[in-house]
Length: 511
Ligand code: NAP
Image (cartoon, rainbow, N blue to C red; front, side, top):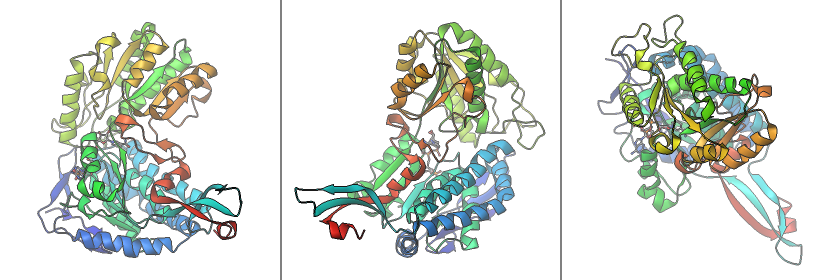
């Protein structure tokens, strides 16, 4: 029998009372650990977090909470090797891909520790300047931001068990708001282990961080007016959360990060250097974490005249990507996370193929050291020569290693095509002319959370199309969920309430 992971709720470790579900190695098929959240006293756990965790956190200043994040960083760094082992076993990732999750998490937490320190010894934040409300300047208004007195419930996706926790927990804890995380079941092990290490190190007040592994009945029923929910996952689950009776009844603030059909766009008249940068980035995005990144490039727009050259360039690089068992020497891309994800990728690929040609067929590639039952699959590049005839490519998100090349006639045609994604997390632009790149960035900004602009001068410096940096906004309008995360200290807004204090200038000066 495999180990049953414990939940941490109500300030103590607790096991579920049911049979639970087993997490498996997607490459070897072996059972790893079990999770179960049945029978937990959720009401008691939420109350403990709100009352004990929240109270202790709010008693600290921003600077003290920033120091607490630094202490958590040290704990995570000390256990980094264990996290890489869990990633390989549970997510089937090669070391570089595990690093995107594990080191990305530690880096993000560290950045928030630094940013938080600049907020000093305050317990709430001023927002904007004093505003006169009438002719007499004595009675004025000052907006302030105070930490919400509820819990932050995180419901996370399977693809970033480490980063997905800490990119949200960093701004929440820095704000003074206790966290309850429910990781996706398939990869809950890494999240649970990180929470266990940080809780046992005693660097956070009790109740500041709790974890529920599994999907317990009634989780969302616990929500109360000052709680917030941050969700990452599919649009269909997002819709259920948004319309949940407790969310609707208590006006619970909800942030959604959902599906996104992100694009890369090679501008007309781009130089061969810009073309090469696009090709390299597309291949990176298709293969890092087997393309299981919400920000990954799914659509590639190139001028008609360069369609064949782009197909050849991307295919040549894809052919050099060795795929298979992440433990084997020389393998650059490991598995997808589960049999169900593999099936979902194959289903989506078959659907896209009804309106696209296959330019590079991953099914023809030999896998390294992977049995026929391993969740390993090589990348596939599809192509649409006549963009006006294809609809599915803008609508079907294949969550992994598939992208589609699309030919465009002129820039206006390309912009129309990009916008058919109906709102995405990220678009990247490749070209040389600063004015053309800047105006295209502005054109696409309203439908994207992030516009990543690559010209040859930043070819070796840029942080990557799909890499989410804590300094920059993560989220996107429309189909992408309409959420906002990160973006430096802007992330704290979600965990604070804004109020206008109207009073005499003498009172306001004491704030
Ligand atoms: P999912 O099936 O929607 O699951 C996401 C989370 O919701 C999991 O923790 C899941 O728990 C939980 N959940 C499912 N049904 C629920 C319910 N009725 N009430 C409360 N929680 C519920 O999504 P996924 O398959 O894990 O993730 C893939 C999707 O996430 C892709 O579409 C991708 O685009 C999106 N994604 C977006 C971002 C972003 O930042 N925008 C990042 C990563 C992924 P269980 O696992 O226990 O079922």
